[in-house]
Amino acid sequence: MTDPTDILRTTFGFSGFRGVQHSVVERVLAGERTLAVMPTGAGKSLCYQLPAVAMAGTCVVVSPLIALMHDQLRAAEAVGIRAATLTSVDDNRAETVARFRAGELDLLYVAPERASSGHFRDLLGQAKLALFAIDEAHCVSEWGHDFRPDYRLLRPLLDAFPDVPRLALTATADAHTRADILDQLGIPRDGLIVAGFDRPNIRYAISPRSNTTKQLSDIIAENPGPGIVYAQTRAQTEKLAEALARTGRPTRAYHAGLDPAVRARNQADFVASEDMVICATVAFGMGIDKPDVRFVAHAGTPKSIEAYYQETGRAGRDGDPAVAHLFWGADDFARARQRIGEVEPARQAGERARLTALGALVETAGCRRAILLRHFGEDPPESCGNCDNCLHPPKAVDASVTAQKFLSAVFRTGQMFGVGYVESVLLGKSSERSLMNGHEKLSVWGIVEEDEAALIKPVSRALLLRDALRTNPHGGLEFGPAARPILKGEATVELVLPPRRERRRRGGANS
Ligand code: ADP
Ligand code: ZN
Image 1 (spheres, rainbow, N blue to C red):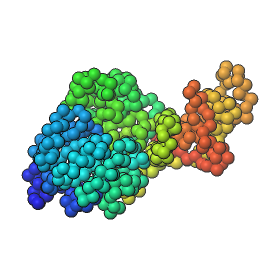
Image 2 (image 1 turned 90 degrees about the horizontal axis):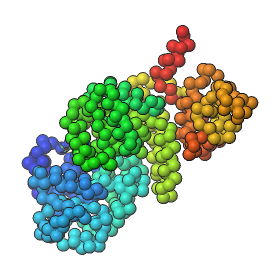
Image 3 (image 1 turned 135 degrees about the vertical axis):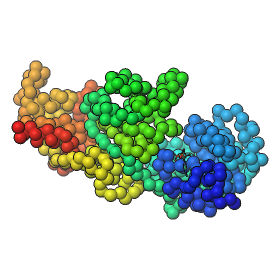
Image 4 (image 1 turned 90 degrees about the vertical axis):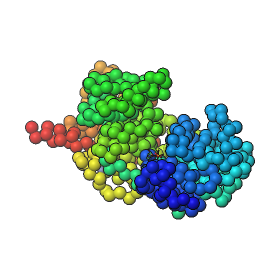
């Protein structure tokens, strides 16, 4: 067998391995079962492509998305690797099967549903296999954020060829998911290799959403380079692209519902540009190679820490300073919680844990990076010096009493009014509505003092985030399961106040 470093140089044209690539490749070449957890861009493909070239026989790659497979195929063929895809959209399937049987393929890409068929298993028995590579391996776990039942059917196939080494790869796996992948795919604990997840040049910042367009315009003004704004809906990408054009920067929208020609053009324009802002759904960014993205802003909360890491990871691939700013709303969490109620019961615990982890990230007064890296199983320093909380330490206050007042007001007014109305009751602000409802006679009328008033909105957000409050379809607030413990004083509500507001309040008191 040729020396792997030679193949790295001659076939791939790289001068050396990056990060954990070397250890992964060594394990694979030694025939050992391995799970490689490496962030996007770390070079996962090479970990199976190089062994595929080095070893006799074919490397079978299981990959969940046909579009991704075809990208990979093109990239592999470009460096002279003998590769093929075997999917429903390939009309050269007979030829591919013949090439495989003749031992003329280094790489054979298949989707999991095909891989698990008996027919395919028979086919694999007809030629020499070098390796099984299972890409996006988190899909095998119900704990993962992207469970695909077809992945569960891979195990019998792998076990039918016990001597063929297996390499599972993923960019996104928390500790729980990782353990599950090892179990599901029959990989020993010591087969886990985790790459460093830190992206030190990315500055993380997270704030509550107030005026989205204004907040995003500020980010754009502070960051003259190209940027991505992730919106939550297709309609929002278009609205934001229009609104943000007023900053004077070129903007484009990108989502799966656009005419393919327009979408391709917008993407190409963005890749070529040095100052464009693209407003996109999360579909944007997969497989896009633009190293100089200077900021990624989220107009809404991503669906998990993994998704957040992956999406923000598209900033600063060139290693120069970049910014990731997330604007979250309590309603994002309420909606996510509602969606969890609709998924199959077996997956709800995992989804809920993911949401709780995300809540901890947005609410922390501590280092954002530390939370991210701990989530990926690392042991980072307490403080990174390059996130909002490290740069401008916020103040944590115990807002339990204000939270109790808020909950009481929601309860006394019949669990049917929105935040604004409940606030006016707490502040004792008379209106025709409050008179008509007779709410001015309530014990909670006007019980919040002037200096406490600024806490009301953040408290309402915190209560929604914790599922102490829920929003009914008409925007009215009602109790969620976490309300009672707070009312009874069994649970506290800590608030993190952004330093800017602190300053303003202090300034106000002095003048
Ligand atoms: P992943 O799948 O982990 O997101 P890829 O396999 O697509 O990452 O690789 C990301 C980029 O890094 C590709 O452009 C690839 O050619 C490049 N790359 C991978 N390994 C190396 C290496 N050892 N040296 C230099 N570039 C590399
Ligand atoms: Zn930090």
